[in-house]
Each structure stands twice: as C-alpha cells, then as structure tokens.
Amino acid sequence: MNVNFNGYNENVLTFIADSGITEPGVPVKMSADGTVAKCGGNEAFCGICVGLRDGYAAVQLSGYVRTPAGGKIAVGYKKLAADGNGGVAVNSSGREFLVVDSTATEIGFIL
Image 1 (cartoon, rainbow, N blue to C red):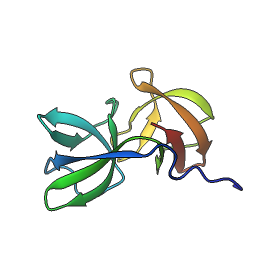
Image 2 (cartoon, helix red, strand yellow):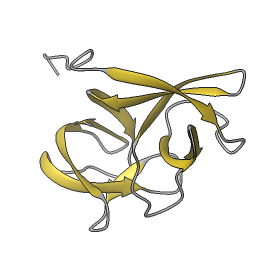
Image 3 (cartoon, rainbow, N blue to C red):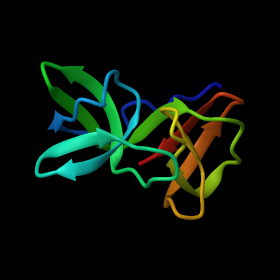
Image 4 (tube, helix red, strand yellow):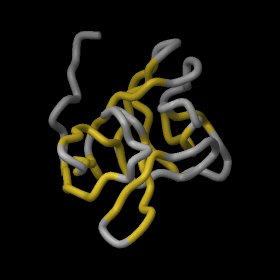
C-alpha cells in the first residue's frame, strides 16, 4: 500500500494489566477500576494493548491500529468484536469502527 495511517489521532492510556494479558497487540476490555483484561470471543473491546511492562498495560483508545484478523474484512464501517484469539472479527454485537485496510490475516482500522 502506498499510504500509511500510523500516528493518526493516537491516544494511549496506562492501565493496570490483568494477569491474562501476556503480550501486546490484543483487544482489551475494562475488568475493574483502572484495570484491563484480554477480551474473550465475541466481546466488545475498548482498545488495543500496545505495550506491557511490570504489570501495566499501555492501551490505545483512539487512532489507527493494526491487529490480527481471521480473514479479509471489507473496508468501511463494520461492527467489530474480539475473536478470542487475540484479534478481531466482524460481529453484530461489536462496536462500529472504520476499516481502512485489510489482508487475509490483519486488519487496519480507526478506533
């Protein structure tokens, strides 16, 4: 692709990381006051964990992100939810996001 969306409107906050978050790049949800946990399948997510250190998670809450996807997702506004495998999938119970690029294994969208 000849364009790059990285850096667009990025907004990252630090939360306490639940012990179930073992690596960055996964969709997360609020699990307690100031704490995030990895999303299970079909769960709506609040952001993507972009960093993990000493029990804290840096969570991107807005801007362009890339995450794993179980297949190519059409561009445009789509309802997305966690797929339970550390990525996202189209799901009618998810939140609506703008998908701007997609491959068979990854999706790029605006949180």
